[in-house]
Length: 116
Length: 112
Image (tube, rainbow over all chains, first blue to last red; front, top):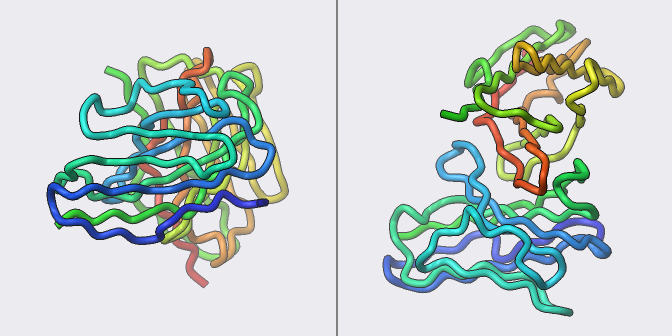
């Protein structure tokens, strides 16, 4: 598609439950990025993929967070055993070229996760 | 420590005036600097990119400057309109395939 699609738009989970977020990048874009935005503060980079391979995972919390980009499927970000502080908007972005080429990132509308 | 600061959380200006937003950074050496616009409930939208060896970039009513000595970028919107009201984010690309680093943004309100 011509836009990055993210589902669901909103997600409510009780503390300790699992949350799974999905992202369909723009067709033809090889790079996918996940960011977390807590309470309108700055974006925190989580992880990026080049096709189905992890490109950079330096921002990914070591525990509870995992992500995948499999061929012919939307990318996913999964949080096991959610905590209150995971409440945030999670944005996905895609790009044709890697960051060191100044590649423009196109962002999806975000998934608003609320952990109660 | 490394920091990106955007001059103010909120900026109000009169329609028709030029809006100037500031992005300062410390302890970074960015290869590129980008500006994005974010509307409520939506993801950021890319506006302009400027490279470390460029002083100025323009696109329609938008102008970005980049001073690597001052470690500052200025983002100007000339002849501002109420439709320009949004949050504007600066983001640094440090090179070497490191991820984008975003500032917190400045919320611009253009008053008719």
